Length: 483
Image (cartoon, rainbow, N blue to C red):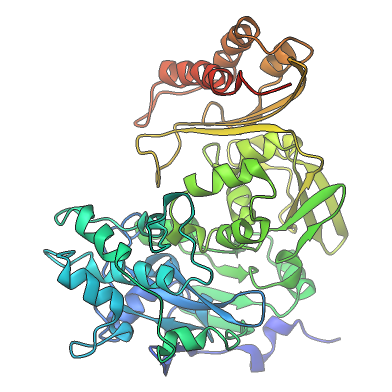
């Protein structure tokens, strides 16, 4: 009988190999060692620890990833939320690798001459995020762009407490385009490193990156309590702040089946292992509700790693993707050694951080049926407009024809132990005229939906009030929509 691949001696590695600033480095690390900790141990102290949970951006680094067209894109990520084992074989650039005191990188130079740094603690992270946007192909600035096409939201995950953001924004706005001699710009035309099959056994646990989906499912079937890792933006917060350790971690974000992106006449299929930034780029506004949602999900540093599979896998009642996906009537695709099954997201959540997904199953994708509702909106109520956890999140998808609501779906987050659909409010709207009277009736029902709690983010009464105000806001903003 053939032994499982992960038990074979030839797969058991003790050293991880990473290219940092153009030079290969060996990393003899534990399974849960973060890239931030390892880099600082290597003397690359431009990478700072400010929060250890992806809130400040002081630890930002660039990582080379495939652009989907045979080339490379430079993504900025939080080194505190990436384990070294997860980047085995990868190529990373730190602030030290961008330039030198005698040959500053353009982002470094503009930050210096425009007074973008005072104490300097946050500066390397800002420069790295700025460099990622500097090298972004087809830079067009987007909704929050400067005149030079720089999207200022590329810096939304970076925090500065002393300089003030105007000179930092001035530095970003002054950047031109990379010169042909720029080695990082030239690197974009070459393929990104392929994900390596990794099997690491260390004192604090094991880390495995299987070669195939079948291998991953076999490993999960044998170890149903293993931690499944995609982007790591949620799990690694627990690793850093709560000292969580898993006996076995299985990395799955590289698997082709989890990186699919398909569009048909009846549905859109989104791979569970694609980062939110990749989905945003590939969809390119094709699903307007998701286009409204993407910029409000954390920061670019987080979206460059976070995945739909991870967000749904944690089953958090305050996760931002479920309200949107519930409004879109999405389904979750689950795979195991027994085969594949598709479950409506409305039936997926069963309790606080509990779902119908079995321990031996992986989320491989999310399916959204088409045609899409013509009127959509995402309302996120939080203490900060961007880069914050929701107090309440609401997703809307309506079909209003000749002034009558023919169909409506409303997804809610933050008001119960699970994300949920607002069935009573939907029923109050469907078949009724799209008028203020109708909407106020639905608003009262929406405010009574769920079992909101009072906590440090908001009181139960505030959450209920925000639900009512949300649907009223939608009506006031769209009541002039032509029939």
